[in-house]
Length: 397
Ligand code: PXP
Image (cartoon, rainbow, N blue to C red; front, side, top):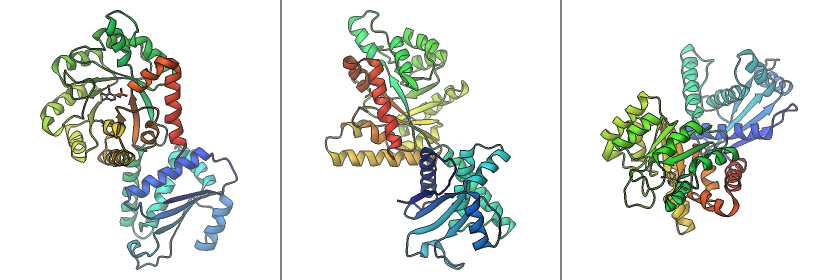
C-alpha cells in the first residue's frame, strides 16, 4: 500500500473525498518516480496539528501541513534508505478549509496542493533554505499539479456507440430502428456521450443521422471516421464535439486495428490542423504502443483512444493480464505526454470494470455489447447496467 491515508479528523470528511485524496497521492508518487516507496498521509484538525507543530517545531499555533521524513539525516539522500518509506504528511483539514476560503480555491484543490507540498518536503525540497530553493519548489509544485490535473479523479465517462442500431435498420432498408431515438434513450439512461461511425460505404450510419444527432444530442457527439476527404468535409460541416480518427477498410466487419500514426504522420497532422481551426478536438484510435503514442502527440492530437480489442479478445487469463498491463502503461504514458485518454472496442459486461478502474482513462466507448444486451433487456436497462459496472469500478479501488 504505497499511500496509507488515515482520517483522524472529527469534522466532516467523506470516505469518497479520502479515497480521491489517496488516489491523488498515489499518482503523485508515480509522477515523482517513487512508486516503490510508501508514505503515510494523516488528516487531522487544528488542535492536533498545533500540538505537533509545538512539539517538533516549537511553534505553538496551527499550520496547514507538516512533513516528517522517515529516519533521514541532513546528509542522507532517500535512495540510501533501507526501508522503502518516505515518511508522514500531516494535514490540518481545518486550516485547509480556511485557506480555501481565503484564496477562493476549491477545497479539493487546496488539499491536493497540501499533499504535493508535503510530499516535496519528504523527497528533499525545502522552500525555507534559500530564495532559489523556494523558487525551485514552487516551480515543481506548479508542474506536478498541472500534470496531475489531467488525471481523472472521478468515474470514467461512458459514451455509447449506436452504430448497431443503424445496422439493424439498414438490414431492412427502412426507417426503423432509428439510431437518433436510441441516442436519446442512452442519454436519458445516463450516458455521457454518443459515438457514431460515418463509414465511407455508409453501411450503417447515414449522413441524415449525424445531422439529426447534431441537433438532438444533449451530451457530446463523438464522430468516428477515417481521415478521408469526403468524410472530413462532412464532419467540418456537422461540427461534432470531437472526432475520433480510425483506420477504415471497406471489407472489415468492424475497425480492426489501431491507426498507424507513424506511417501517416503528414496526412494526420494536416487533418488534425483542419479540425483545430474549428476548435474540434481530435482523438486518434491507436494500439497501446509507446511509439504510436509519441506519434499521436507529435501529430497534435488532443486525445488518444486506446484499442482494447486485443485485451477483450484474449483467450487466456494470462494473455488478458498482459494486454491489460499494456493498456495501463500506455494510458499512464499518454497522460505524461499531455494527451487525454479514452478507450474502447470489444468491451462488455465482464471485461469493462478493470479498464474503467484505470485512473488515466477519461471515457469508455462501448457499442456492440450494450446494443446486443438491449435486444433482451431493453436499451435503458442495458445502459444502466453498464453504467453501474463503470461506476462501481471506481468505488472498488
Ligand atoms: N471505439 C472505436 C474506435 C470503434 O471503432 C468501435 C467500434 O465501432 C468502438 C469503440 C466500440 O466497439 P464495440 O462495438 O466493440 O463496443
